[in-house]
Length: 137
Image 1 (cartoon, one colour):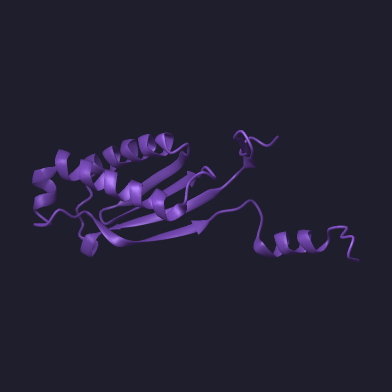
Image 2 (cartoon, one colour; image 1 turned 90 degrees about the horizontal axis):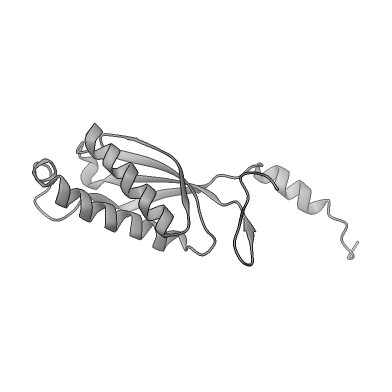
């Protein structure tokens, strides 16, 4: 079994997604201290959701997460939990910093980017599927 494959009671899986979260109005609110705290928050949330934060980094107005996602998670709900929990904690723990940029209880933009990151290209996967020894001929 490859190291990137994981098991649950009824599945073997390797689901890697790249998520980008952007601050509301692209405000440059994320400092090094906030970025470090966000990494801890996201690591904890992923663990609670039976997923793994593989890589994390960001800039003043956005963050990138590479997550090995559990098939038990729905992507939209997973991202919703990431955004809601991290926003609440960051606004609480860094109130004076965040209040300089937002007067409402916001932190993340309502939108997000997500992309699947697989081990092979779509063309290679299509070719593999086409080459199966189908009983249909």
